[in-house]
Figure 1 (cartoon, one colour):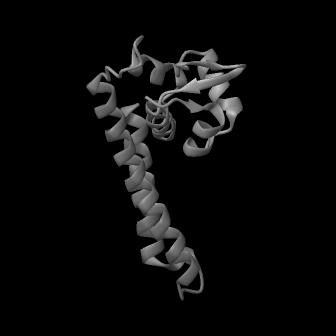
Figure 2: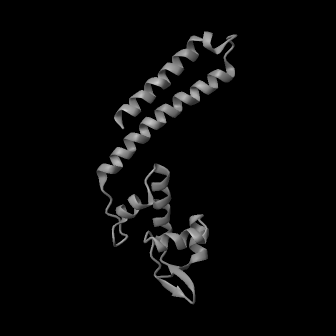
Figure 3: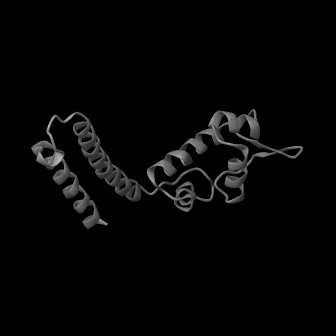
Length: 138
């Protein structure tokens, strides 16, 4: 198996080498060895880094992500936290769509005042309801 130099992994993953060194320090990734002073990684490290970045984007902390990989870095992902996070993302997506619609409407509404516009008022009320619903679940 061909090992990848830290610079190659950095380029393929789109992350600076300093991030890879930090992830190594905290145990998120593990080099397969060294060539001189440079860390060497298996090609799977690029996939693992992509999963770490996806986890971060989903709102998981680095500690939570480390727990998902397990001590062998093979990934024993507990499914229930993933379901909860997916449900949370669904709520955020619905709210963001409402906000997008509101912004587009405000930009194009012909009403003299947005407070006089029934569509504007409906979108604001819808957003407020989504916000209250999300807060009551947390």
